[in-house]
Image (cartoon, rainbow, N blue to C red):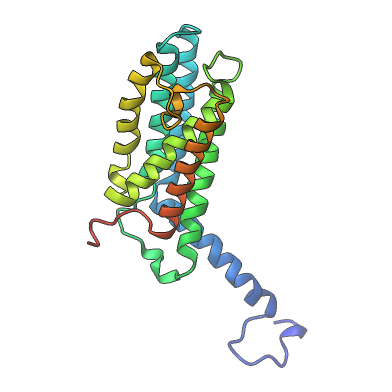
Length: 220
């Protein structure tokens, strides 16, 4: 006990400790949210995707269909992993925290998408990636938006279905020269319409997952 503690009612914590309480609680809540979503595993998988992209770019030709298909498949896989992390095997115990849960969902989806783009860009550094960094960022964001929308409809465990289904549509478009901006991976990296479509899908996925969260089949 210090001189500052004299005269304080018994059981009342110091002002500094009371002020730090909400901050520590918020950090603990964020840590528990990340742990329940297996964010660490997601980061490991994203790193593995970057390594796979690096290896693939070493052996792939500089142009042609395969120069686009393989990187797109890896990017779709990275987005699918992010979608899977939106679900928790324990449901959403953070519902008891009320207003904090949407912010946790928003932060997790945006931060993981940024990490995915940065990690894959690092893996492709000093290598010839069709579409470059701009195309990579656009495609990963769009794939992730589809994964988040799928998680909201089918649940986090099935979030991979959306990106893989979209990938199946995209691959033929690479050879048939489709011009619709909604098949953005088939468009040039600086195509404004394709970038807008991918951004809209990503924004829609983030908004839905923030407000609604992944579908909880166990709860239903």
